[in-house]
Structures are given as C-alpha cells and as structure tokens.
Length: 401
Image (cartoon, rainbow, N blue to C red; front, side, top):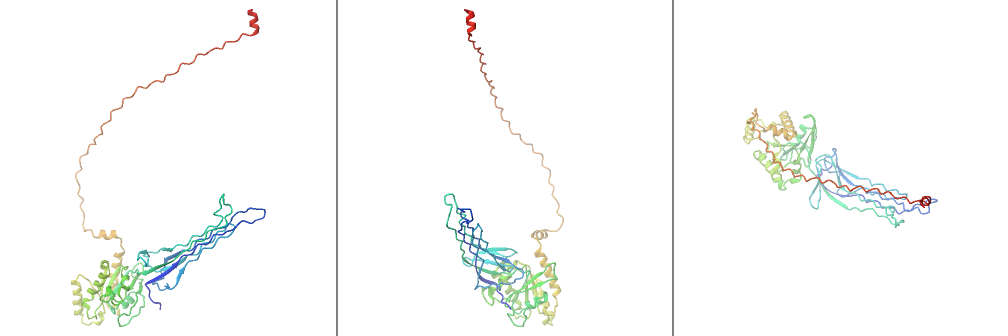
C-alpha cells in the first residue's frame, strides 16, 4: 500500500536548445556554394497537468530531477534540428504549485488544465543565418540556450463534495463505508485513519458525490497537536462538512464546541460552509430518554442533529436525504439563492403621475455673417491681331519702276 503524500518538493529542468551548424554547400559545378548550416531545435518544456486517476502525490520522487529532452542540433543543407520532447507530469485535482523560496502561489489546479513550469531553451542559429552582403562566408554558429534547474513545492488540498470531521474513533470510516463503496481500515482504537480516505456515492444525485474521511482532530490541532495542520487543510475545499459526534465519548457535551473552535482557529471561513451534525453509535444506548434529552440540548443551540448508527444502518436514509438537499443547494448559482432570499408575496407596482412635458429651450441663433461682395475677375483685353506685311517680290518691284 502506497503512503499518502500531500506535499512534496520536486526539482525540474527544461531541455537545452540545440546548437546551430557550421556548414557550406558542396556540389558539382557550384564553385562558391555559400553557408547552409541549419538552426538548432528548441528544448522541451516541463508541464504539469491534472489527472482524474490520481488522488495523492505518492508517485512523485523528491530525490529525482525531472528533465525534459534537449533540442537536436542543426545540420547541413539548411536542415533545422528537431524540438525536444516535453515532459508532462500528472498531478491530482486540488494541487497547488508554490515557489519554495518566496512562498508565492504560482498555480492552483481547481479545474482541469495545464501549467508550464519551465520553458525549454531556444535553439542556436546556424551560419546560414549570419550571411550578409559583406560577410558571405561566416565560419561560426550560435550555441543552444542553457536552462537551469528549478524547485517547486507541490501541496495537495483535496477537492471533495463532503468532508467527515470528528474526534478519533468517532466512526467516520464506518460512516464512509456505509455511504459509499469504499473499504477503509476500521478498528476499535483511536487514529485508525492516518491519511484521508476517499469514497464515491453513485446513487445519490445525477452525478457522483465524492466523500473525504479526514483523520481525527484533537483539541489543539490548529496549534500542532495530534496530526496537527497536516490534514486540516483538506477541509478547505469541501462543499459540505459533516460533524460526526461519538456518543460514547466522555466529553460528548463539549465535542461539538471543540471541533468548531479548531476549525475557526485554522480558518474562520470554514464555519460559513453548509454543515450537518450526526450523532453516531445510537445502537449502543438502550435508554432512549437520554438520547432525546441530548438531541434537545443540540436543538436549543439552533442545530438539528441526525441520530444514526453507521454500523447497523439506522437513520442512514434520513442522512442521505439531508445530504442530497444540501448538495443541491450548494450547486445552485448565486442568482437563485439571492432570489430565494426575497420576501414572498406579490409586490405592488407604484405608479407615479406622469410629469408634464418639458419644453426644450431652443438655442439662440447666431447672427448670420455678412457676405462680402463677390469680386468679378477682370479679364485682360484680347490682343489685336497684327497682320504681317508682305515683302514685295522682284517682279512687283520691276512693274513699279
């Protein structure tokens, strides 16, 4: 059986870029072929992606460095190198990727998706890239880009619909087995459950309902007592909290108060979630009067406990109905919830008297600009035609004589 791991430090490194090639064209009848060295390929990326089959981070080895493939070098004849293969690391839903040095949250897998943790190095340019009019035969190429090793802290906060919270040996694992088809370890001693157990209810709603059994909480768990904060963080993501009260506990009157105070000490927002109070192990009591008085004490505090016996199945049908009702309310959008909060009854529309029409004030007209007289263009008088005098010919001169 694999150990449940919900926090691990992982080291990754993206692929290096391939080097460019120094090459020259050598063919028959081509005296000066010129450079033809190709570029190197880019290195592979390191990518985190979600997987529905995983429930923990047990498959990740902290002593191993996860490396993507390097890019291939370029070749002659202007052949570029191949890109290195990406490295895909699968993680369960609810995984947070944190920078261990600064504590900054880099990504939170609350929904299916991917996150590129490290980019691959760029491939170097071949000598064909550096050819210019002045430098027609470059005898150098560019090396591939180097990459550095990086560290990430993976922290899992399980995403479940229902979370079972209670003291050690309260019967949470037995209740999980009664609600779902899970088969957790069950024994009659405290801290039987040392890691969260997951079960699925198939026949409650139109979709599967995930139930998480959180290990037992002691007084002072928010300060590190017992299992401490190691599993309190898994309650943050659940939709509904079921408080399992052990009726055989000597401090049964204070049990609910202690559980709520520990949740408030860890995160005050946890008490804003819908919750059910379950009184377990009612089959151990023959005195029903004591049970009625105990239920009345909870009702005086504004709570409606559900008495059950997870071992015999008594009261389980009522618990399933209440659980289905709360899950449907939690799944409804905020608009429907806000509409339900409006007071019932018909709302009369108040009709206001129509306001008198407002006359629009016309803007004062601007005085028209005086038009300047149009000056007629003075046309220059047409030049007189000058008739060129004909020079007398020799015959006409002789006749005049």
